[in-house]
Image (cartoon, rainbow, N blue to C red):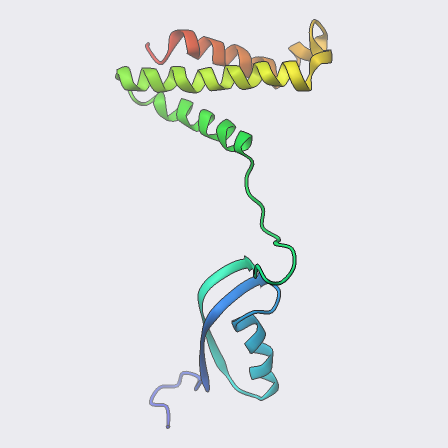
Length: 141
């Protein structure tokens, strides 16, 4: 069928899944089309990190402690713009999470830092002090 536009004529529209690692779906079909001199346009129905049936998954999940640290900081920042009792509660809740995390970090990971200069030159002490400040004060001006 002749093409009415100057666009490239394609032989195949490949509608399959695709993966970032491995050869499944469109990633497996592409080299075969090229070997047979067929021009194909690929349309991935889903794009996965790796196919579960082909060895070890290369994707990873974010640990819960990382998410809680990130969310506590974001909630603390966002709640600063909410000037009502709910914003005040959000500020105190986020500060409480930060204080608990910092106490655990000092108690578990940095036991050797207590009463040394290392404690007072690290950013963790400033996070602890800031957390205590916002826990007491909230976002009231």
